View 1 (cartoon, rainbow, N blue to C red):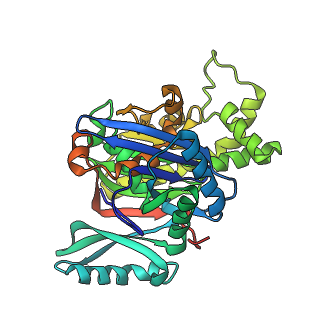
View 2: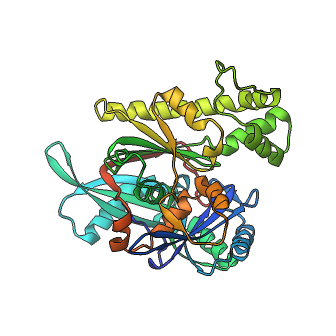
View 3: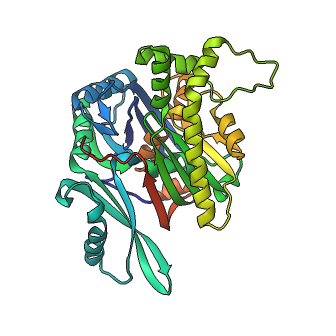
Length: 401
């Protein structure tokens, strides 16, 4: 799998720090020759309004929340690796002539991508990885994946971490990070899942993403603007309620799927009202997923996705797996990025289990530091197809916010 390090200072961080729009998460995983050990997890609400389009605009508030996680959950490790959401970065695959030197490859890749960057190159942090060779007609080409983010967006994460009392030594990219914990380390109950063609659906607060993999190879990623906050704002508008009250209503009364034919389930009026408010937005997301599936099957000559794996805080919405399974006609299951780890921390197992949907990115970041020899004993390996495609309907026009 691709490894990026925008503004990298080395690969020695042991703690993954995921600064999300609604929650900040920290995970410390200790790999041993015998097993993966989950040493610590931490969790706090992100101060409201401190992040816009995935970019921090109040580093002091974020830093204070990080400090509280360190204090409450007693984190000892202070070197962390952070990440940027896909909508805050530019990700492009480019094809270049075979046989270029490393220096020539870098110059050529920049030349291909520079016109797509929203800022001058000297204002961006960037990294790239050679994916392999592809054929365009009869001509062999070198496929390169180029990733860039505005320097200020990167620096604000580093600054927030520093204010919080930790040192951010690397910045990774969410769509790739998640693959380590949700796919590589999950070792699914159905052992054929890894070799199937499956869709990974991440339901975040401000956006959702779909990635399609086959035989452990990432082929396709799309990011959409519908997230958990979309549903909360719909409730907020419909009920005339405050944001926090609407968020509570979503958690307590929200349903993605109602079985109208069941005579054993009674739905009260408030639950049905919440359902009617959020249903159009869930349907809109399902429509976007169907379009992605249609594009994928047209590109890969009718090849079908056989399973959906759901992660992210939005996967808490009751009935969400049933909804997508029913709407898309594809079996859907919830991911558990911590499933195959032995917990050795001080929190109750029940408390840790409740945090599982939120921990995909933070766990993937922590796994980044594991030595390849050790990680190979516990994890399968995801790679990126040379013809990989990335797209976003939420790409921030101003990545520095």
